[in-house]
Amino acid sequence: MKKKAVIFIHGFLGSSSQFHALTAAAQGAGAEAVLLTLPGHGGSLADFLKVGRREWEAHVGERIAALSREYDALYLVGHSMGGLIAIGAALHAPQQVKGILALSLPLFARITLRTLRILPRSVMKGNSSDPYVLAARRFSGVAGITVWNSLLLIPNTAALLRMMGKARRTLASLSVPLTVINSEKDELLSPRTLAYVKKQLPGAKTKLIQDSGHFYFTDKELPCMQQAVTELLQN
Image (cartoon, rainbow, N blue to C red):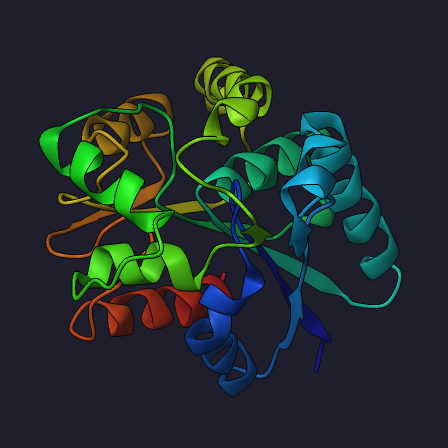
């Protein structure tokens, strides 16, 4: 049996802890789960501000190159920016990646009243019972962000927007099987992403779920994502 590995890539300001339910699906399908922590994540805001897009992309590329010498087949699961990085890595080295699952893929952003309600509260210390706010807090990979110092994130946020634009321009060149799962209630992303993916890559698999958010995955919809990991490994 071929040795398979699933590389999990978190998103902007994110953490690999959000993948725990999905790593079980990968392991149950006979693959090794490899959780990455992107440079600048897992520490303080000061650490995050020292790095950017090039370091994140280089780190993933280096890990793919190293793991391709150890495993017969590599698959990528990326959340948000992690999906963008996964697509870029597969465009750069398509022979090393057998398939991609992108969750909350950010090709088009949006700002709504829900955005303005959830984002500020996710970096405040006050109590909250909102599952979307609690998930954003729980899966944050950068400590020390507040409403007041969040302006320091502008340069890296601008870099993220450039990554989104590059992904839109290059998506049609992707030769690796792609599955995208986005949510209607995502507080950060426009649902039009899925239509754009199908237009650029008619062979891609897309699914619009209804109640999950950008970070929060409902108990009802999480099995859909676990099943997508299993199907990814069957390509």
